[in-house]
Image 1 (cartoon, rainbow, N blue to C red):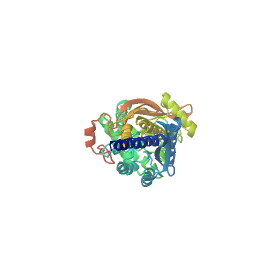
Image 2 (cartoon, one colour; image 1 turned 30 degrees about the horizontal axis):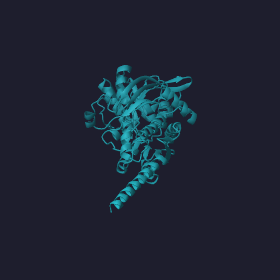
Image 3 (cartoon, helix red, strand yellow; image 1 turned 120 degrees about the vertical axis):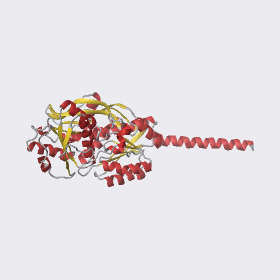
Length: 415
């Protein structure tokens, strides 16, 4: 009987060893599957293609392998539609069995994905979606944002405009949705705390065809105009502004998307002199950025936009997290913890880590459009290092205040 008992113990140990070995081999032999959500068709497709190209460039640099495992990139077209994005996310997670989700471009997409990724407990990276509350009042446990919060560059920029450009009175014109509100809100708060005044706010419909009527009613007795548009509307604004004879009379400052490289190549002299703030510029003079710009130009035939860089760095973030767990991305809690602990010191945009709510702490660059060697670029004229989504404000006190919105902060000096 004692002999039989020892045999049973031995068999149990052998079987357990086979199972454990099989599990290890399954991890070693299987692919790490990354699901990318990006708009490849529709009005946001140019940005979406930059996102895809940036992701692919990094994965190609490392031979699409991590910790001895091959990397498979599965791409789904969201069409720039939050409902479609959620459907595609479900496909990637439940059918394709991806180990991590990434991508998305609209804030509304981020809010649509939040409940789903938390319910599924799927590690998720947001490299582009910038709505503040995605990592403030409504964070998702399973999301790490490697891009930015919309108001983040504007907090230091607002103060810088007041103190260094000495502007006292500014009129605002911006797109009438969350990204516009939060960008303007961040600027207004720090600009006014530094002694400036916002004296007019003009909100333009997201899909407006012609900005001429809105530009026509802007106040002219101001020191500058703060503008926030993306894509084709950014291109149109600069042309309408110049046609109205305002370019040489009222300086334009604004959010970084006003002159992002995704639109700058379609602009002419009307963009010269515009000053903005963002966490990236293709003109950054660092070895890491020079390497990335060269690789992107070789692949896409143009300079990289921030959409490209943030997805390039987002792909690296995923890979660094996978390395930290020895490739065992199947252990979701451990993989998520690794993603929240990544520390990159040499991204093209500069050093970055994420705070406890999952948003990057990173450099913010003040950029001025100049023509260098015949090409327009966002020349960096000032750098703020280590900027968090709360900047110099106390996070606990900050989160007690309302989210920046169409009516907050109030425009006390608006007539």
